[in-house]
Image 1: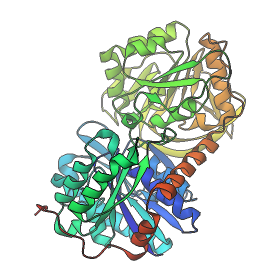
Image 2: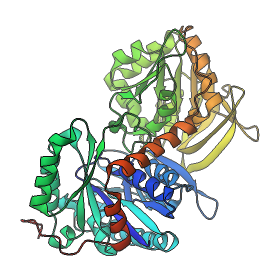
Image 3: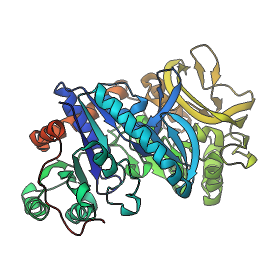
Image 4: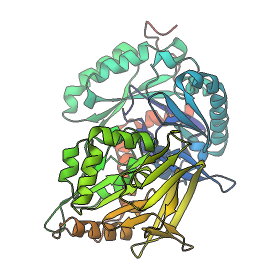
Length: 508
């Protein structure tokens, strides 16, 4: 097997990331040396990967998750272009792990040819190293206003003569219209590479769905390669926090007498909302993403997550009344934790001439530190201790603690302090710290006590790494049990299907 496959979607959040991971897991189980690839990702959920020179770089968290599905360590090549939105009109461009520019929609067109060539060269390199590369598209291939210069959807498939399947989320409704419309808006050369469809998140009687499958095959000449059922355990490593809904995960019943209620502020430019996932994996911990001050008032523990636009998101907190709700929560003696950008918001002052250019602005003043933004971005793996337990994580931030002498929350392995604690208010720059099981248990135990939830008991046997591995196995099981794997194998091994019919009108 020396091939590839493009997993495209009718929309964003149709299921491309999880289907790609599931196919990767299925192939890995069958002894195939497989790797994931997403030419360009737009997401503020990223992880730090060490490059060949030992320096840290960024890729999307979804590609790191897909790498795990393949039994691989994350590689910068798995996501060569990452766009991190800082506003509605601009994004930071991360190329092979390194931030190289900030672009708007207008000047992005000038940079796109260079990005495309890097993406093509990277995929060529991966195809030489692996038996198969499963590529994830972005958004929809039928975004005809963006087709010129596309190098992540059908532009990628055309360049490499790669077959594509299109996944649609039936939970949204209109999945058959979306399949037909997606295909019918593609040029004939693109249509020739679309081999079939996959339905995602189906609930109900397959017998009632089958006439629709038969009809879409009849009108397009392409089969439905399978129907994936809705599964509640698939919620980790979302590319976009909007994919979470409101309640994160599927919390198990509490081990003690009480639940612990966690409110995570859904910032406009929320970054690495995945930090809350480890909390949501704990029995008896209900994690709620919210933009409502009332939810903050009802919470036991509040989290201010990371942000790609710390100063503007802090201004939004104040405009919406959420800042007042957070301050009232802290004044009531209830625990509050900030991660990365959220930590910076808790400071007394923020001096930012780099990200926002607003200069010095007041923070929420809940931690006795000052933060200054540096031109260079800290990108590193981190390990050490916190609350007497081992902790590991990663750092992605411009902001640095530049003043103050707060008690640290964590210590690096070499003894350097990190983060800050002031009574029941906590802050750290480390993403992923709560994935360290013993540290998470100790933190939640302390937080529950401060919140007055003395009937809450942390589970002693939750292993976050095991939960992640189990989720990847579920994805592999779904592919093996519900998709036509013989057809997928044929596509990956043999390439596009010859003689597929053209569906008018097609793009010019």
